[in-house]
Length: 87
Image 1 (cartoon, rainbow, N blue to C red):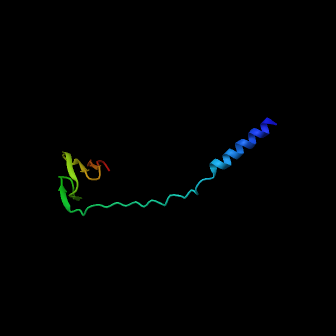
Image 2 (spheres, rainbow, N blue to C red; image 1 turned 60 degrees about the vertical axis):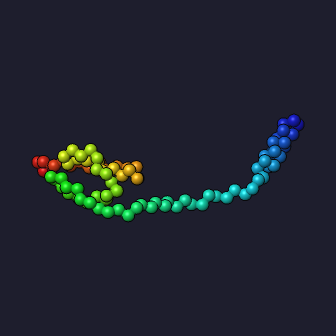
Image 3 (cartoon, one colour; image 1 turned 30 degrees about the horizontal axis):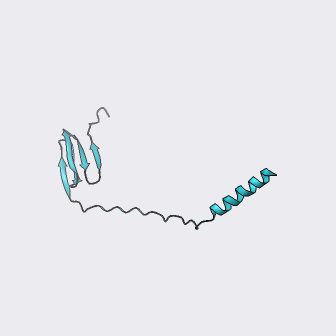
């Protein structure tokens, strides 16, 4: 008898506590990336040359290996050249 009374109180409590405002789902997020307009410049090494964005800074240049760092984007591109031999 006490068990039935306890279950009734527990279910009544759960019904009153759970009756609140209607829950609405969050709207879908949209990725909004805006980059400044970049200009290109040319990097020339003895083995190759290519264009890169002037927003990048060339660091750690050793021969044909260097790093293009983008401080505004907190990123870096590591570039290394090794010739293919016996192919």
